[in-house]
Length: 267
DNA sequence: ATCAGCACCTGTTGGC
DNA sequence: TGCCAACAGGTGCTGA
Image (tube, rainbow, N blue to C red; front, side):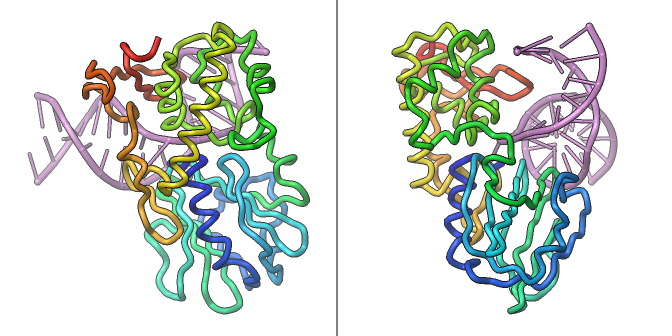
């Protein structure tokens, strides 16, 4: 479920409560949650959390030892701090702290992954520039888009080129920029690329302000839903009138993902 | 290099 | 109520 704004909301909610907690043990209840490339996760015992942040859609838990735990929530992953007590319905991993609390990872579909790495996670994780990075400017965004035949929406979803944008915010940014999801990325004018980058930043920042979008069941680390779903123009609105021009919103499939756009506002 | 298709998983919803 | 298909905020692999 979660894209950049949801992961950012979760990271902000966990940073203070988790700082300085010391790991007592890791309880792995679904083994495949641990990425095969991960350093041995049991090695975290005794380590102390120094901060919680985000890279693309990865939640990053940094430790005093210099290691970092990258958590990818994929479709249904949730993180929450629990007092001692029964496991959640789909609890796959728990990081148990010395004080008895635990960070529980609940994940119905079992797609989520944990990977413990040494050093800078951004370098290890093979993700492109973060969509909200100040280093992403018109020139570098343009270089990514130019000369490619792939539909612009498919490119926006490619985490190795641009990290953090998922299906909701790709659809929303393209609506705000007035660009069809199917347009070949190399066919965009410099002006359209500029508009698109601005739309991306705006929609991601506004979504963070509203603590993310809860279309179905996303909740943050405190169990609270976001409210940005109320501000969506096209995502999930197939057949409903465009909020700008009343034309029915269309749904197509691009790269196996539901894709929503207004056939009148987006050319 | 690209990209469609499928795999990974479970839960929910809507049609018949 | 039951059954079945379609769908879901994501990504990785395979083969054309």
